[in-house]
Image (tube, rainbow, N blue to C red):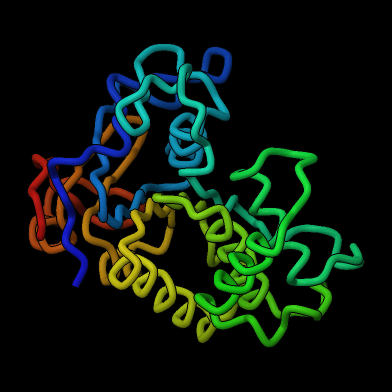
Length: 256
């Protein structure tokens, strides 16, 4: 069983606010993610979950507040290979693009080496290792467009793993894949977190599944409604309705 190391803060958001024009999407959000954690970010559609994730990744700049990654201000952070990212609808690409599974995963090595660097035997070894971890090595010569949605998502996880990150962000990774593939996908994430010690940050609308899987829940509805354990989230779900479910505002409880 993976144990969160609360002495090591990987991600720190402090007072994050963000607006699209006059539309305030996020207001004064602060939270921390520690080494080994598996954080599920939930909330209703349009509540700012994906926007918040993009701010943590440096893809958007907040109107106010700070983000620190591995103790460094995000503006000074250079070690992006330490962070993997599986974006929303990663499977929405040109299915006719002539890229094999292995070629797709090899792209993940560039985050470690830099663009235009020649790939080595070591890079191929890490690529094959990543494919093994997601149980897709036997498909390495298949075209990515020939795979099912669930298989494609495994390949995109492998691409993130190929860079040997310490944390992986996933934005609605199970959108558009069938229920059986979703269950297999969550089992894979569980293995990556508990056996490999990877820190995971998962944005999802699937509250029922997320509460079964993650170590901590952060509920966002423009502000941070709660940051707690799934047990507390479910136990105290009486006073505020979020995404059709009731939650209570509460403090962050550590869960080991």
